[in-house]
Image (cartoon, rainbow, N blue to C red):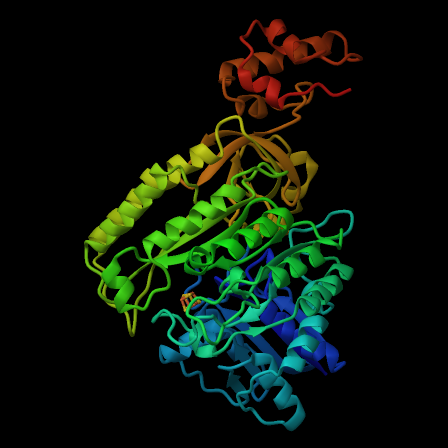
Length: 584
Ligand code: SF4
């Protein structure tokens, strides 16, 4: 008999789990079953949607089911979509009555709060640790909410790194064709503001933060790497800077401790199999109030992380009244200081053409005390950051509703959002990724739209080399946290990667063209995707090539790039020499 683990994906700021990420909570469940040497199978909700059924379902040998559901209202995703409430209901109903089912994750708690009460024998909705609750059930046959102990945390985290959640994850790929799987790690739990934290946040309820040691985390990542993992994000950190900080219990602003985080990051980097390494959130007030140790930590981050790293800063609102009423964490002055520090070291570009480390900024609408004027405060702050030449990689504006929040006045909120996109996001994007800028290792994930569709996986043509250069759109992004979306105006086989030159800007995405295109094999569509080569010119190049080949099929039609334009009597555009290359 077999337990079935269904990964409905978690999606929280400190717990990424939507592909290409593999979340830690689902791994802990698999790790628990793995360490108990029990039979189990792992499947993602996207595999289930495609009609895949594990053996235990096909053979009727299910012993029980564990489901993780992580997004109360799934948003828009490129590569995978978390399970919805409707899907969860129908999934639960589809299993034989009486089969033990445990469902956990943030969405389960959220749906329960909204009044969801599915009635079914053997179904248990976990509100504490799903893994520890399941472990108790396996020991006693009884469902009781449980929390994992420190020892269980280490055991299940390390066993989870070698579990089917990793080895059978569809995004792991193979040695010859590695996938984009990114391993999300839980470094600690809780927030240093546990005594009186931001009013809307659940982290303070977890009490004094619980740290995992650098040795424990490094060992988990080593095991994951033994099982094929190469990309890692250190999540579960409400603030990278207060990992194992001093004075967490006594001080309002604990003092960052540069040593443990350096030990952790350098320790991970010692393993050469690890490619992408990114982190989680930063707390701007801690940084601003402790500049010296924060500067040391920032330097360590820049030295060890992959480029494109983002430290999300939760300002939430720049309105001082909202700040007071919601016990918010940082004010505009502290934020400015923290952003300045990160920019000082992080603006420099890394190997993939991205700034090494930049801050992200989160705003929330719907907080107590908010008025229409609150958006003006936010606007003034963003304008002052822009005037200072400071870079922010991403601005997230979230609307919250429900108990403890107030209604959002839609008109000024929408206006603020539009203003940010037009006046801040777009110019920043143009400055950070100017036309002609090179970006390396873009991983291609979808054709003809911004979402990977079932046909992209089921119809193998989408991954076949024969599709290369055909008309259509290809979307992709670099591996890591908060990557920028890149569009190419022709088809590239999916699940491959290439280097590109930026040719244009959308409001939140870029367009580009690949580097190393050979004019002797380029399609008409590929010629047209180079700025400066229009429809007529592309046609002229392709027909000149065909004529030359018809006369002499033994030769290469074009000897070099100049030959392409001399032979066709066309002006060579600037981009041609950047992206075209005659290969022998
Ligand atoms: S600082 Fe961040 S994690 Fe801590 S209470 Fe505020 S929002 Fe929550």
